[in-house]
Image (cartoon, rainbow, N blue to C red; front, side, top):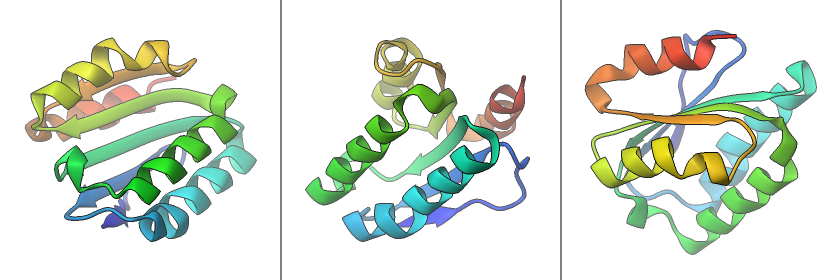
Length: 122
């Protein structure tokens, strides 16, 4: 399930992933928020708090996630992934930079505050 994270600066979209994440979650929670942010400011600062295993994303969720990433490809400014999955944190910090034009960084779950501060930087 994807849940919108409230109480973040207006220039950040925050999503909390728990349990199984489906295509419907991506379509109803993530995509409308990303589209709105791009319309409002022309760039994306994205915070993902990942408290589920990446394998809990259904095939449809992955496909829609890829589609929205490509749709807004030039708009990605900062991506922070907060997780206790060391491989995901490492991938975000070291490999995402080859996949998106903006910056990406991984953070452990107990350092959410630093992730928000980093992503909010101009």
